[in-house]
Image 1 (cartoon, rainbow, N blue to C red):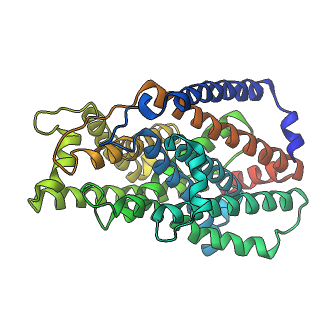
Image 2 (cartoon, helix red, strand yellow):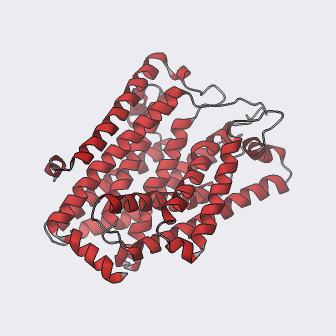
Length: 398
């Protein structure tokens, strides 16, 4: 099926070439980081995780969100998602690859990854994080490719693949749960030291991931003849609004606990993020207020059925949601966790251009992998005749 990448319109090659350029720029900057060390980043002794790990955490959620397509189809027989599942699985592959790359660039010396393999430590959460991420990547790669091959030959997927899909549902919950345990068990980091951290991670993942997927589906509909189906779009939008509502509720619980309890160490990170602390006004405060406004606006727009069904308004609403969740997990989570420090001192953190360019390089790799996989999936559907058939079926469902 790889030969299908050789037949594409010119815009496909322009897009892939642009992504390759971005990847090359990121790789070049990463080489400079390798030579000069992590001192070129904004991280320090007090802030040992930065933009790389925050993006790792965010995209673990994006990877886990594929379960929002798989679970309704295989547990509740919701057939409207049948033609979308392969795209969700391929998006999960790209997201997991990005997660792994963010860990590699954060280590400073990439060979240190071998320490986890050569010297496994089951008592370490980091070890289990590697296990669940690698397992989830392999499961989605095998299931996605086997399912696509079966569709190409117009046969049923083998039974073992269906059993593996069921395993992937539970595995999806595990990857973000273990990631939450990675930071929730650290003493002295009061913003993270909460029993609800894993639940917050899953709620945010199940709204942000499907929102990104739905945005990409709407873009795919504009660029190709593929029709995801209005019924599928509406169902996925409904899932998103419920998950977003739970995510907002969980964050409000954190705010209530931090301030009503009167425990200063729990309130200081939130104060620092939104208003500053002890005369320190961080650059992230305006971003956090923007995230709060974007998140509430997206929730109210999605909660109104008429606004949720408006496909002209829907992409903008989803963009607000993605921006809100990315700011919360991609900026605020790490900065609030490290500031103030356990000694109640302030060590400001700001990502440097090196970090930003390397992060964009990893984004480029993820988008490149996603582009190639989705291109193969679309061509297989055309070849098998399911591409036009699904579009017709979607039209009849409207």
